Length: 214
Length: 158
Image (cartoon, rainbow over all chains, first blue to last red; front, side, top):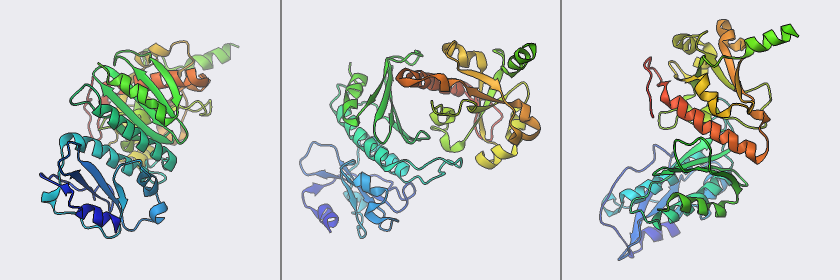
């Protein structure tokens, strides 16, 4: 009910539209974007989990709802707004896609690679969601009008891999259930890294700031 | 003693060798070899490692004909080709090496099987760092010469 009310809120206005929705990527899920009236903020992604998921709200969708991705809602009845009422920009889409990538990773089942890989632990997905939010905030506050964005991938090491390159610099994170392993390089040609850290997710921010500094 | 040395010498894939790495299509990263193709963990058994084929002993079509690989990766799976010398150059002295190791599941090509191993000896945080550095290095090498799924022509991404 809250979801429907949110979408019908008159403070939400839209100007342009874009597709696609993502049913093909995340079975049964729906994604849309909303921007408050008179706001300079980027459109906020709104994700709707599938109505009938094994485990319901305690399924793999649950960690994503817990503030890991802004605007993630559970709905069993939501009808997407008319497509002409949806605002999407390229930069927002870039980050929204990462949220969708993370959902896809969260949805992987045991043996997702055909060679017996484990599912990605929910805690690792949750941490990756936090890390994405941190990365987006750093990118939006960086001196670069269009900063690059990271690439996410499921890892056989039982976590979520995140690689982020900007100009010559590169940061790689292995997001695990309890810690984030961070390694970074100042040049693509260097073999030796600048260092290797095992950090709680909140402390990775300094490495993102290093990546996007002038 | 002499026998032991001979076995050791034979088990070592030479620096002049090249090796193939069969690529699980589920691990391709934007269509390219990725980190999951070269997972090296400190707690892997010491006699285990990343599975490879010795190009002097098996051709690309022969590698793609191995039943167990076809079953796992599908017909015409992607393959990366790497120079042993280039692969191991930055980790000389660390114990990381590529050795021949029979794989009965490779059938008539059992002798063409090799493993990338020795990374299990790298311990602690510094060991993890070295493994990550090496993984990035070898993924970049794999992208320099790889055969995309279904293709006999090598592609390259610098």
